[in-house]
Length: 455
Ligand SMILES: *Cc1c(COP(=O)(O)O)cnc(C)c1O
Image (cartoon, rainbow, N blue to C red; front, side):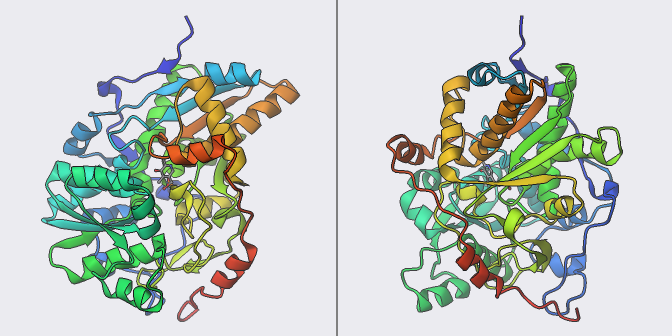
């Protein structure tokens, strides 16, 4: 019998996260204080984050134990399955062996609860009562709403206004789990009021919503801020995905030649690939290829300079060294809402600089074509974000058909697309548009890159 789902029991679920920082061939550039240009200290960050997460951000420990209360919640849906894509292989007539790690079975429908639950736990443990965050299409907001609900924390979500208006279902999900959700820019913060004063019809952006959430946390008692991607501790929590996948590949008596994932801020990709990356760095799997896929409409890794930049529009966050399109960049309205962030995780940017990963930028029509092909061969209707990874996975499998090589390909399937059906509808009815690389807009936004004090 051919095994289609490679499963782990709850007892086999990893009990530590993997921290790649001590294994990096070169250390990560420091995070800088925007005022002084000096490396930030844990003290600088404690108004926004609990100390446990700040320590994880800079930790020299390779393995960080997952607290039992977090493991107990993970067990509500983890371990997630690794699938062998027999249907897709057949449809492509490829000798490649395709596997995918599916995170869409979490209650929120993506990988995001892996860190949401951990962040809620550590904030609760330090006596915080309330969190503030931003969300684009609503995936992060809904994941954190679930995490906060499970630990009895209040949550306020600033949701990018266009999505708030066009995607009510994610908002309803957040409210069902007890969170408060407002459209951003809002009148609840100075950052929001400033934007509205200049442009009352502002559609909002992730950068604006981050400014609002950071200000909310800084100006309310007992409130912290929470970020769903980009930062080291977020990527750390997501390594549960790659650690499970490694055990599952072992069970299948296989090891990937190629790993593909989509990148928005870089957390699902980082979480999946870092445990395997360790083998590559150590020379055990020198030829392992790792490919990150982003949208043409927001190509931070392939087109953005590697530079210090802010995480938000208002310039309130510390400065991160990353590939960035400029913190004022507002990408064209592609449907992969989770991939529309101007910057890329410092860890992922660093991998790219060191030549440890490859990067591709894809147009949305071929991405949806790949998503539909996947749905028609594997059944699962993927999130538009995840379909970016599928697109490149398919390209690699077709290259195997050409060359006759039987490579093993592992695809990160970060979530399902059940809230993105109107985008599929556009594709199926031939109305979906492509957006070329917005060169002029990027050029303009790059003039906003901050000068690093003292540099
Ligand atoms: C948010 C999201 C992404 C992009 O975020 P990363 O931090 O890059 O992982 C990708 N896929 C899905 C399903 C998402 O919800």
